[in-house]
Image 1 (cartoon, one colour):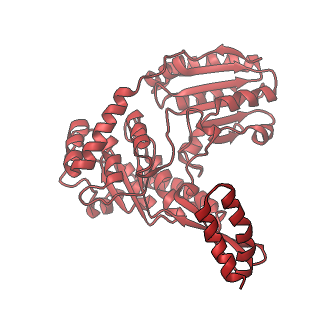
Image 2 (image 1 turned 90 degrees about the vertical axis):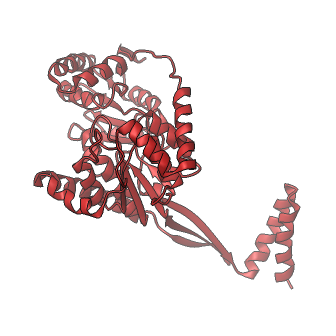
Image 3 (image 1 turned 180 degrees about the vertical axis):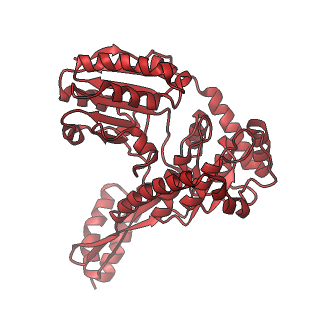
Length: 423
């Protein structure tokens, strides 16, 4: 039976009706008034009203020179890892055709979406890595037009590192605008910006609600909430490392969620002490301390099987395993966005550098979906053709199958072929 050494503060379910109404109003105004509405909301929320929201070619050409050479080198390294892994994924999504019975040919084609919009958040931190994840991935998938946008930083335009990341990732169009009005512009189009087919990327609760309301008008990746980490540890784990990894996620947002599932009571207790100790000098403790206090959990379990059960119920965005036998958890855990195996990897690697995508399911969505990948940007479509002899055989069964459902016109479409080809 799982035992809690620390439990998250129970909170009433948030009433988001005001968020829903505000988002709906902004979306409708942008849909009706286009660039006029975008400019109104940009001035209102971001103190930003440039002559043109699209980043000019001169700005694009000069941005690299505004960054230290080492930062450019590091961005390029991170992007190379993400591009390489996405390319490996893409190679495994293949067209094929098979003859399932004599004369019946069925096939699959992988077709990329024509356009996508990448939303790169800019709130508390400049999210350079979000540009890597949401621009490179569709480009590798074969999306011919990738539009990227991000909010201005304190009314001063894009953070140079974010802009360079968009450029180096291969964005075809770049806009300095953020929030709900930016997503509306991507979905509906405005003067100078044609609408896109998909919108991907994380954001605050208003951005998430906008994606929810826009789904259907455009495709989306997933509805992401505050970030999450769950760590499975045993007596071999280092509490110092465990605490550092917990706080690495806690600093994202006061609503970030963290959990430690420990097979060792001593490891669990020492990790709690270590988190408190590290918080004393943590530069981002104003956020991390609140997140850990309100949302952190420490759970003791009696067996690996119980650890798997609790983890799968939690269904974390990020799962770390720091045990002497991490392969057991790789083989048995089913619900997670991405798993980091052994002390040698950490969530920060996946967020920034190692090559896997950091746009991942939260709020237990890992029970039914994975994270962002090239597969999100392609359509798996099918086709079929048959010889006349095979069509007669299929038609004979299909006519009866249609009639069982009283779909008589369907059945006739089968019968006319059977009659024609049987002559």
